Image (cartoon, rainbow, N blue to C red; front, top):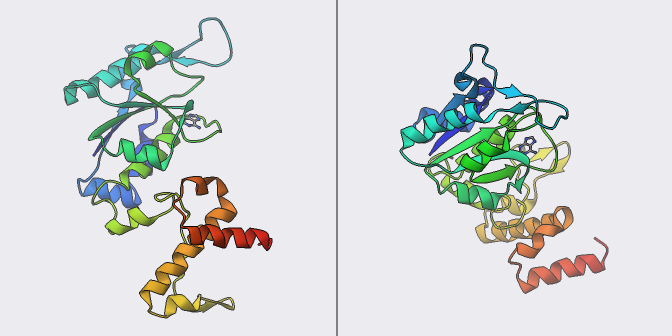
Length: 245
Ligand code: ADE
């Protein structure tokens, strides 16, 4: 899968993503990361890409032409229009479900804004999706773009060593993940739950599922609506509620 990132801070994106799991996937050619410096398309000697907002107000606005030309340089090479995400707190909230949808694309363009925003007209021409990573405001779209690329990448075949791990983790089935333990068997006086040492695979699975259901009920009850709980599990939770657990 190929990610094109239009940004004023390509180093931030390169340094963040050419590291760890995404970095290894890029090295192995499973992912391609292509950063495009919008400033290279400034069209003036000073590399100026922003100006005052018409109508007044605080801050500067990124001008349309450099962004458009940066996008066109990518679309021209691809020979077609590409799904193009503008990162903005005004967008739809990013989720695992959206990540799965984006992971179906072969190429994605991510546009990182800065200053007080981006001239609306270029968004009308190039943006296909407006995405926020949460209800808070960052200084720019670079971190949100990295969050999206990381999340989407781990859904791409071959990026994770263990194919199974992408499937079973939090949110994939609308339940939080069960607790994990590794060596030592006792740490700070706390023993690993005995069932995990039993070697009884079915019991381990049963315990894990129960832990996931309980955790979700306690920490993210809003997720339970989408979870496919069995009648027995619903009763278990109801019993705990009645007992004030
Ligand atoms: N740019 C600034 N804040 C943002 C957010 N929360 N999500 C996406 N892009 C942003």
